Image (cartoon, rainbow, N blue to C red; front, side, top):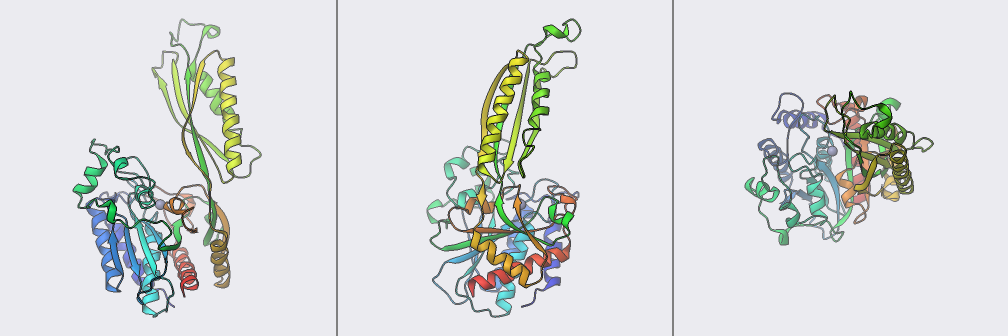
Length: 408
Ligand SMILES: [Zn+2]
């Protein structure tokens, strides 16, 4: 079985040219660029006899089932939308790799015992309504139509109306959900969006787990006063207390193998250079692939902040504002993929994912696995995102042989 490299390169060239900005790739779900790419990909799948369905939120399922089998499908695929001024490879790499796999199966008349289904999840990046993975959440019934009536665009249009205006018909009762009845498993190929593979000079990562996360909001309340006339010892400075918290929080993950802690969002009020800050609000983002560690570190983070607040004589409010559990990939799929990579002499390692993917939404319903290809310099969600074409080819080769092994 041979991958058609030129064909794949042409697909990348055409699709990455469908961008609403010169800088990087901007292809938001439901935009005219997105609609063109949907047509481009589905046309190619129709030509080889795949049966295409599109659900209410725009998830595409293309079922390649040449022998009209009545068995469960193996799902492969990813997304085609980007963040504003994003890169060429996030999402698209997995989608085009999956397209190429199905074309190669078709050309080689590979006899399959399970249909292979390309899934393109809509609105993964959350660029339209500020909420990520709309498509994969909808397809797994984690959100429904009512939820889409509570989300808005930047211009205050209701998500549901916005999607409908773009030509998608809402018919939830007819939609094809992923519930395990017709689906065997899902394998998603994606760019790593981190720098581990690039640093190690390896072509492929075989994902074992996707990190879970807690987001804790800390509100520190002090007293605002004059920056000139208030002696240091009489101050209740919320920002000074927050500063101490932020610095000490970063030390909480010392000794843990893979846990990370980040404060990347902060707001200060009144935010004036000559006024002592009355209120400082910041978010703590804690992630790891061990759920127990996330819980433990979160608890310590709360205790630490409360203690520092007390020492600084400021008030504090602690609130958990976001949470996602650790997702473990299916061990037997992971083994099949790694055996195949080794058999094909493709350099690889087992690793974890710090970023959440559509795949995680399907996990727990059907067995899932992921294959990573390197991101040069670990850069993603940026116009400078890049992956070597030879690494993409290694990824396609691994996906192809893994799919063939499972379905034939
Ligand atoms: Zn992505």
